[in-house]
Length: 235
Image (cartoon, rainbow, N blue to C red):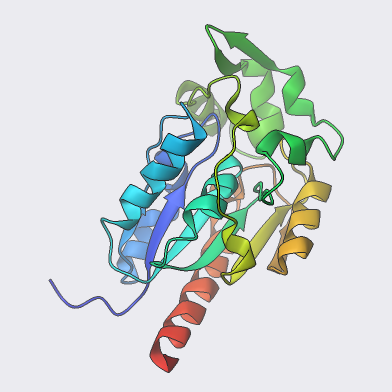
């Protein structure tokens, strides 16, 4: 295998998703010479989800860019303190501070439409079919049906759990704000992006720009990877 010359990319998915939500990004990044992995965490507990992301870091070469969507932003915030991580890319994502949980951060902003379309059964939170337009309303109908059919099921108290570590205070970061988001409030996204001092991009998208606007997301990841590679050479 040829020696890797570009940073690795590790993805962390959010609620009602799995690693396949990055399927429009991964083949392109691989073709461009990046080693790529998408964490397949179970949404069973914050600590175990963070551990799953770190396990992926152990399977790729360093340095790595962590990319988190939605709740995946909480995961990369904690997992990103790992010394193998060179940068963080947030996609319409949560990014709690040390004194916040995913839920307490969300509570600072108006409740979004998606929460009118969920159902808690046997301790797991299901997205109803009526909620998919709030989550991924700018996708074609067939893709919306696929989002619903492949949803991951978080435990009901997942957003109230805490672990240590705030990587955005110590690592370079980039943030993609989804301006038409009805799942994570766009004002929350702008707030955390400003707080972390992120290089920020706004895209007219639902909550899933990696599916509806993949070229935009790819360009941001490329920018982060180029920055990390330059820093590595300078070191």
